[in-house]
Image 1 (cartoon, rainbow, N blue to C red):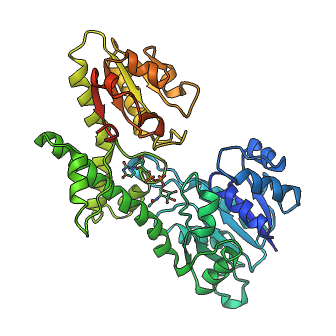
Image 2: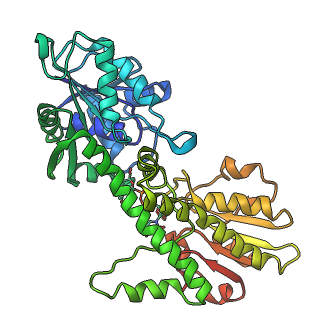
Length: 411
Ligand code: SAJ
């Protein structure tokens, strides 16, 4: 039996590779020639620990190949992006396009799994699209029509630990029917050692969104505390450390905002589905999205004291010790510093990249700098990401600077 994985990105390719490594014949499908060619050469088009070994091994054993057209298969796993469009609604056009590729290949008996993070109702939407186009098929075998099965199995792996967490994380499997959920479970069991929890599709969709919203709301609480603490003239990091000594309190850490392509996006799928009810979730998003402005106004207060300030911005990535700049508040803050302080020189420091990103390249007053040089030259030092390189800097040099430490690294 063959599994087709549609979308060979950060989730699709690792899933395809781990299935193939566990003896399942997998055909990967992607619209990008670059991705297809790379996979067929046994290479990986992005960085993820251990993924390259799995891909190279399974391609050379003939268990994994890639192509642009959707093949006939017993199981389809759809792992394409679901970005949001204006008004914060989920854009299902990639899911629709993947579904349209599958529709002509169906003979009856297949399982379609949606893995993309999706708004509630997306799996039903996918099933409706298939059955509208193919009235000869059914969900339940009524009128003797062959059955197609649909399930939603969201991923919950942490970038950088994907190959480990695919095996060790519990998974939620939501079927449009019980049989669909059971068939999906049988497939994930080939590589997942943890528990597989069966439910309906909408609960599975909401579980994924709920996990990331939980984290977003809790970070928003910490970010709101940081603004309150500033107003009261106390140290928010000490405040949180002390509050967390209570056995039932566990507050997360404030920062310059929330980044990445999951936590800063997924809560909006709940808000746009139920705008009247999702009040706390919306407010948390707004609090976190506002945090870069808070940091920018703190910098402005300091910068106004200099005629032509030199500002070191430490970190561009969306979290520590990675090179991923997607939806990064640190990148946005650095970009705004350059735009709003035309007379200033901005020294951007990001140990995990070696070229100024395009978002900053057009600003004439930003350059990429080494950590030590930036600190030596700067009047104002803004710490945006708690990269390991920033933790042990010379305290005496720092003491001479105006410092804004958004992560509490130098307390
Ligand atoms: N952040 C804070 N304070 C904290 C923790 C995080 O400001 O105390 C910030 C980070 O700096 C970053 C953002 O939040 O900007 C998100 O980082 P993260 O490490 O919390 O999460 P992601 O986006 O890398 O991965 C999340 C994970 N979800 C949860 O932990 C509930 C991961 O398991 C999911 O698979 C992933 O989203 C996803 O793909 O949805």
